[in-house]
Amino acid sequence: MPTVMTRSCSDCPYGTARVVGEGATGARLLILGEAPGADEVREGRPFRGRAGQNLDLLLVEAGVARDQVWVTNVVACRPFRLLDGTALARQVGNVNPSGAAMKACAQGLDAELEAVDPDAMVAVGVVSASRLYRKCVTLKDVNGRVGSYLAGDRTIPFLATYHPSPLSVNRAKGRRELIRAALERAWNLSPSDGQGHMEPP
Ligand code: URA
Image (cartoon, rainbow, N blue to C red; front, side):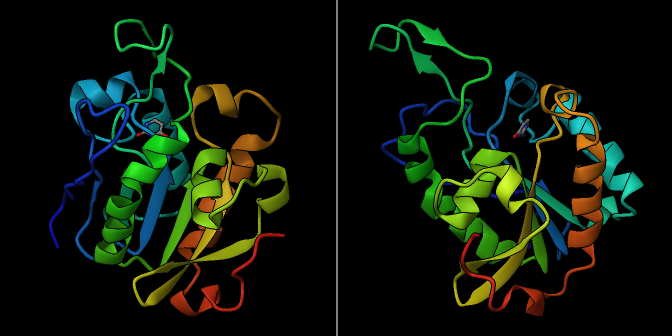
């Protein structure tokens, strides 16, 4: 198992510098983020900057071995919004990945999940949660529930929780604890925990 994973894609509206998943060989837990931001593009690695620092701290607090974790994103390129319908004026920042970008990256992400083959996953943020549930969900509804995602011929159990970005963490009291608890719980899931939980509530 390589420690980084390439992602091939086409027809993507972003198509800029790809930030690919990385982590431990034989990782037990996979963290699925939404998309790289400025820090990630600068360093060419997922979950850097403040969101990455928060995530690292929460993993330690959850008792999760960092060298048993794989981190990746729903889309590999930094999202932007076209302000005038052309690529000349782009708005970056807190822009969610478009449906077209998620579709273009879908096959690559599925191949990555299959290759990493983790025991469990944590989707952080509503974009990642909806991607694993294959429909729009709200974190309020799915937080704390075990879902399962079919990757190849394997069903991988997952939990969805809030995003560790400072914006998200500071938004509500107790949110940080919810993320920590989800990481700890997912770390203790076994592959068989995913069976029979295919549908979101
Ligand atoms: N950095 C990432 O790699 N993913 C996110 O979802 C947020 C920040």
